[in-house]
Image (cartoon, rainbow, N blue to C red):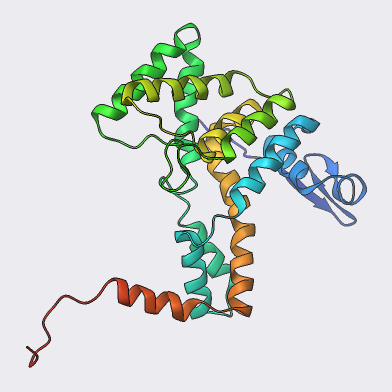
Length: 260
Protein backbone atom coordinates (compact mmCIF):
# COMPACT_ATOMS: atom_id res chain seq x y z
CA UNK A 1 0.00 0.00 0.00
CA UNK A 2 1.37 3.39 -0.99
CA UNK A 3 1.80 6.14 1.57
CA UNK A 4 2.59 3.80 4.47
CA UNK A 5 5.86 4.03 6.40
CA UNK A 6 8.36 1.26 5.79
CA UNK A 7 7.78 -0.08 9.29
CA UNK A 8 4.40 -0.14 11.02
CA UNK A 9 4.14 0.17 14.80
CA UNK A 10 1.46 0.21 17.48
CA UNK A 11 1.16 2.77 20.24
CA UNK A 12 -1.53 0.96 22.22
CA UNK A 13 0.02 -1.91 24.20
CA UNK A 14 2.93 -4.24 24.83
CA UNK A 15 4.07 -6.57 27.61
CA UNK A 16 7.15 -7.80 29.42
CA UNK A 17 7.67 -10.92 31.48
CA UNK A 18 6.42 -9.15 34.59
CA UNK A 19 3.94 -6.51 33.41
CA UNK A 20 1.59 -5.26 30.71
CA UNK A 21 1.76 -1.70 29.39
CA UNK A 22 -1.06 0.34 27.85
CA UNK A 23 0.00 3.63 26.29
CA UNK A 24 3.34 3.44 28.19
CA UNK A 25 1.49 2.96 31.47
CA UNK A 26 1.86 -0.06 33.76
CA UNK A 27 -1.35 -2.04 33.92
CA UNK A 28 -0.40 -3.68 37.21
CA UNK A 29 1.02 -0.63 39.00
CA UNK A 30 -0.86 2.33 37.58
CA UNK A 31 -4.16 1.17 36.12
CA UNK A 32 -5.65 -1.84 37.92
CA UNK A 33 -7.55 -0.50 40.92
CA UNK A 34 -6.51 3.05 40.03
CA UNK A 35 -8.77 3.91 37.07
CA UNK A 36 -12.32 3.06 36.09
CA UNK A 37 -13.28 1.14 32.98
CA UNK A 38 -14.64 4.36 31.46
CA UNK A 39 -11.35 6.15 32.12
CA UNK A 40 -9.40 3.33 30.51
CA UNK A 41 -11.70 3.31 27.46
CA UNK A 42 -10.86 6.96 26.81
CA UNK A 43 -7.15 6.49 27.51
CA UNK A 44 -6.78 3.38 25.37
CA UNK A 45 -8.75 4.85 22.48
CA UNK A 46 -7.27 8.33 22.35
CA UNK A 47 -3.92 8.09 24.12
CA UNK A 48 -4.56 10.85 26.65
CA UNK A 49 -5.82 10.75 30.21
CA UNK A 50 -9.38 12.09 30.34
CA UNK A 51 -10.44 14.92 32.59
CA UNK A 52 -13.16 14.32 35.16
CA UNK A 53 -15.76 16.09 33.00
CA UNK A 54 -14.80 13.99 29.98
CA UNK A 55 -15.17 10.82 32.05
CA UNK A 56 -18.55 11.94 33.38
CA UNK A 57 -19.89 12.62 29.88
CA UNK A 58 -18.49 9.42 28.34
CA UNK A 59 -19.81 7.36 31.25
CA UNK A 60 -23.27 8.92 30.89
CA UNK A 61 -23.29 8.06 27.17
CA UNK A 62 -22.31 4.46 27.85
CA UNK A 63 -25.11 4.18 30.42
CA UNK A 64 -27.58 5.67 27.94
CA UNK A 65 -26.60 3.30 25.12
CA UNK A 66 -26.31 0.05 27.07
CA UNK A 67 -29.95 -1.07 27.08
CA UNK A 68 -32.85 -0.49 24.70
CA UNK A 69 -35.12 -3.50 25.32
CA UNK A 70 -36.11 -6.11 22.75
CA UNK A 71 -34.71 -4.25 19.76
CA UNK A 72 -33.26 -6.07 16.69
CA UNK A 73 -29.81 -6.40 18.31
CA UNK A 74 -31.21 -8.00 21.48
CA UNK A 75 -33.52 -10.28 19.49
CA UNK A 76 -30.63 -11.43 17.30
CA UNK A 77 -28.53 -12.18 20.37
CA UNK A 78 -31.29 -14.15 22.08
CA UNK A 79 -32.13 -16.21 18.99
CA UNK A 80 -28.51 -17.06 18.20
CA UNK A 81 -27.76 -17.93 21.82
CA UNK A 82 -30.78 -20.24 21.94
CA UNK A 83 -29.51 -21.98 18.82
CA UNK A 84 -25.88 -22.23 19.97
CA UNK A 85 -25.65 -22.07 23.75
CA UNK A 86 -22.00 -23.12 23.66
CA UNK A 87 -21.01 -19.89 21.89
CA UNK A 88 -22.02 -16.82 23.87
CA UNK A 89 -19.56 -14.80 21.82
CA UNK A 90 -21.45 -15.65 18.64
CA UNK A 91 -24.72 -14.48 20.18
CA UNK A 92 -23.25 -11.15 21.29
CA UNK A 93 -21.54 -10.72 17.93
CA UNK A 94 -24.85 -11.32 16.16
CA UNK A 95 -26.44 -8.56 18.20
CA UNK A 96 -23.56 -6.16 17.51
CA UNK A 97 -23.99 -6.72 13.78
CA UNK A 98 -27.39 -5.03 14.09
CA UNK A 99 -25.83 -1.79 15.35
CA UNK A 100 -26.03 0.12 12.10
CA UNK A 101 -27.30 3.21 10.32
CA UNK A 102 -30.87 2.79 11.62
CA UNK A 103 -30.36 1.65 15.22
CA UNK A 104 -27.80 3.01 17.70
CA UNK A 105 -25.13 3.61 15.03
CA UNK A 106 -26.89 6.82 14.01
CA UNK A 107 -24.49 8.64 16.36
CA UNK A 108 -21.92 8.45 13.57
CA UNK A 109 -24.26 9.92 10.95
CA UNK A 110 -25.35 12.74 13.24
CA UNK A 111 -21.73 13.40 14.15
CA UNK A 112 -20.95 13.98 10.48
CA UNK A 113 -23.74 16.56 10.18
CA UNK A 114 -22.59 18.29 13.36
CA UNK A 115 -19.04 18.50 12.03
CA UNK A 116 -20.28 20.15 8.85
CA UNK A 117 -21.94 22.86 10.92
CA UNK A 118 -18.90 23.29 13.18
CA UNK A 119 -16.59 23.61 10.16
CA UNK A 120 -18.90 26.23 8.66
CA UNK A 121 -18.05 28.49 11.63
CA UNK A 122 -19.65 31.90 11.01
CA UNK A 123 -22.22 30.38 8.65
CA UNK A 124 -23.31 27.46 10.84
CA UNK A 125 -26.99 28.41 10.75
CA UNK A 126 -26.97 28.46 6.94
CA UNK A 127 -25.25 25.08 6.81
CA UNK A 128 -27.84 23.67 9.24
CA UNK A 129 -30.61 24.94 6.95
CA UNK A 130 -28.92 23.36 3.92
CA UNK A 131 -28.74 20.03 5.71
CA UNK A 132 -32.41 20.17 6.73
CA UNK A 133 -33.55 21.18 3.25
CA UNK A 134 -31.52 18.44 1.58
CA UNK A 135 -32.96 15.74 3.82
CA UNK A 136 -36.49 17.04 3.31
CA UNK A 137 -36.20 17.19 -0.48
CA UNK A 138 -34.63 13.72 -0.65
CA UNK A 139 -37.09 12.35 1.92
CA UNK A 140 -34.20 10.95 3.92
CA UNK A 141 -34.32 10.41 7.69
CA UNK A 142 -32.02 12.72 9.61
CA UNK A 143 -29.64 10.73 11.81
CA UNK A 144 -30.00 11.71 15.44
CA UNK A 145 -33.53 13.08 15.04
CA UNK A 146 -36.97 11.56 15.47
CA UNK A 147 -38.16 8.67 17.60
CA UNK A 148 -41.07 6.24 17.19
CA UNK A 149 -42.07 6.28 20.87
CA UNK A 150 -40.60 9.33 22.60
CA UNK A 151 -42.81 12.26 21.57
CA UNK A 152 -42.71 15.20 21.51
CA UNK A 153 -39.20 14.88 22.96
CA UNK A 154 -36.72 12.17 23.81
CA UNK A 155 -36.35 12.46 27.60
CA UNK A 156 -32.72 11.34 27.51
CA UNK A 157 -31.44 14.18 25.33
CA UNK A 158 -31.92 17.13 27.72
CA UNK A 159 -30.33 15.10 30.51
CA UNK A 160 -27.22 14.46 28.42
CA UNK A 161 -26.99 18.05 27.19
CA UNK A 162 -27.58 19.32 30.72
CA UNK A 163 -24.80 17.12 32.07
CA UNK A 164 -22.41 18.40 29.41
CA UNK A 165 -23.21 21.96 30.46
CA UNK A 166 -22.83 21.16 34.18
CA UNK A 167 -19.44 19.58 33.51
CA UNK A 168 -18.26 22.51 31.41
CA UNK A 169 -17.94 20.30 28.33
CA UNK A 170 -20.70 21.75 26.14
CA UNK A 171 -19.18 23.71 23.30
CA UNK A 172 -19.23 23.97 19.52
CA UNK A 173 -20.74 20.50 18.95
CA UNK A 174 -23.64 21.01 21.35
CA UNK A 175 -24.27 24.45 19.86
CA UNK A 176 -24.24 22.92 16.36
CA UNK A 177 -26.74 20.18 17.15
CA UNK A 178 -29.12 22.71 18.69
CA UNK A 179 -28.73 24.87 15.59
CA UNK A 180 -29.51 21.85 13.44
CA UNK A 181 -32.55 21.04 15.60
CA UNK A 182 -33.94 24.55 15.12
CA UNK A 183 -33.34 24.39 11.36
CA UNK A 184 -35.07 21.01 11.12
CA UNK A 185 -38.16 22.24 12.96
CA UNK A 186 -38.35 25.35 10.79
CA UNK A 187 -37.82 23.42 7.54
CA UNK A 188 -40.30 20.64 8.27
CA UNK A 189 -42.85 22.93 9.89
CA UNK A 190 -43.13 20.75 12.96
CA UNK A 191 -41.07 19.67 15.94
CA UNK A 192 -38.83 16.65 15.38
CA UNK A 193 -37.12 15.54 18.56
CA UNK A 194 -33.37 15.42 18.99
CA UNK A 195 -33.00 11.80 20.07
CA UNK A 196 -30.44 10.25 22.39
CA UNK A 197 -28.00 9.27 19.63
CA UNK A 198 -27.97 12.84 18.34
CA UNK A 199 -27.32 14.24 21.81
CA UNK A 200 -24.58 11.66 22.34
CA UNK A 201 -22.89 12.62 19.07
CA UNK A 202 -22.83 16.25 20.24
CA UNK A 203 -21.61 15.76 23.81
CA UNK A 204 -18.98 13.20 22.84
CA UNK A 205 -17.73 15.54 20.12
CA UNK A 206 -17.22 18.23 22.73
CA UNK A 207 -15.56 15.65 25.01
CA UNK A 208 -12.90 15.07 22.35
CA UNK A 209 -14.16 11.78 20.89
CA UNK A 210 -13.66 11.75 17.09
CA UNK A 211 -16.67 11.15 14.85
CA UNK A 212 -14.89 8.19 13.25
CA UNK A 213 -15.22 6.09 16.41
CA UNK A 214 -18.64 7.19 17.65
CA UNK A 215 -20.21 3.93 16.51
CA UNK A 216 -17.49 2.12 18.43
CA UNK A 217 -18.66 3.75 21.66
CA UNK A 218 -22.14 2.42 20.88
CA UNK A 219 -20.71 -1.07 20.36
CA UNK A 220 -18.85 -1.01 23.68
CA UNK A 221 -22.02 -0.10 25.56
CA UNK A 222 -24.31 -2.43 23.64
CA UNK A 223 -21.99 -5.44 24.15
CA UNK A 224 -22.54 -5.15 27.90
CA UNK A 225 -26.30 -4.92 27.44
CA UNK A 226 -26.38 -7.97 25.18
CA UNK A 227 -24.59 -10.07 27.79
CA UNK A 228 -27.50 -9.19 30.08
CA UNK A 229 -29.95 -10.49 27.47
CA UNK A 230 -27.96 -13.71 27.20
CA UNK A 231 -28.15 -14.15 30.95
CA UNK A 232 -31.91 -13.56 30.96
CA UNK A 233 -32.28 -16.04 28.10
CA UNK A 234 -30.44 -18.54 30.31
CA UNK A 235 -32.79 -18.01 33.24
CA UNK A 236 -36.05 -16.92 31.53
CA UNK A 237 -35.86 -18.24 27.95
CA UNK A 238 -37.97 -16.23 25.51
CA UNK A 239 -36.81 -17.74 22.22
CA UNK A 240 -39.84 -20.01 21.77
CA UNK A 241 -42.25 -17.12 22.40
CA UNK A 242 -40.34 -14.89 19.96
CA UNK A 243 -40.35 -17.64 17.34
CA UNK A 244 -44.07 -18.33 17.72
CA UNK A 245 -44.88 -14.61 17.68
CA UNK A 246 -42.95 -14.21 14.44
CA UNK A 247 -44.80 -17.11 12.81
CA UNK A 248 -48.15 -15.70 13.90
CA UNK A 249 -47.31 -12.17 12.76
CA UNK A 250 -45.91 -13.22 9.37
CA UNK A 251 -48.14 -16.06 8.06
CA UNK A 252 -47.44 -18.03 4.89
CA UNK A 253 -49.44 -16.62 1.97
CA UNK A 254 -48.84 -19.32 -0.64
CA UNK A 255 -51.12 -22.20 -1.68
CA UNK A 256 -50.37 -25.71 -0.48
CA UNK A 257 -50.94 -28.53 -3.02
CA UNK A 258 -54.22 -30.41 -2.44
CA UNK A 259 -55.68 -27.75 -0.17
CA UNK A 260 -58.33 -25.25 -1.12
